[in-house]
Amino acid sequence: MTQSEFEEYLARAVPEYAASKVQAAMHAAEDAERLAREELERLAPDGPATPGHLLFTAVDEGAAVGILWLGLPVEWRPQPWVYDIWVDEIHQGKGYGRAIMLAAERELAARGLHELGLNVFGYNTPAIKLYESLGYEVTAQQMTKRFYES
Image (cartoon, rainbow, N blue to C red; front, side, top):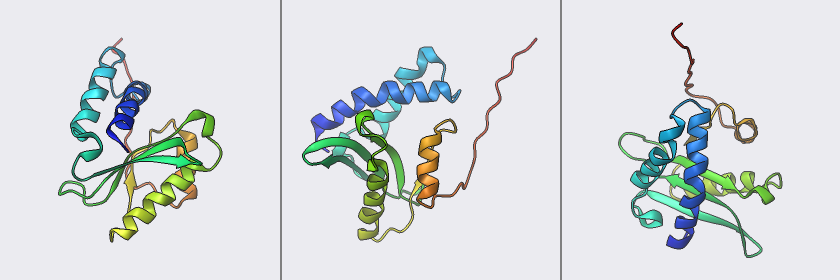
């Protein structure tokens, strides 16, 4: 991924990530975009040149169809991690998500790594089905309950 592709990615990813955090009851709507931007910029302050991160643009026949953002193992997370996988809406349902995830596994295996972790929002049924079909298993689960004082 080039720096300009990363900037395009952020322009799309920030509002989408913010909306996901709101839907998952993790951020208040009024703070969500700011917090999403801060988190993504903190994780990859140098964009695709950020040490320990691999950012790819998925291309088919010369056209960008999606992105993949991997984090390599660090002290506090000893396994590689999928920070984001995204397939352009017009290309969804055509196998690109599966192909991107399998490419991630090949890239990591070539680096001597043989495990990959990720987080998926509970409401994202299509992604959950994809990950399960690829052999991913639930290893932890977060739960939230909204309640109000009467």
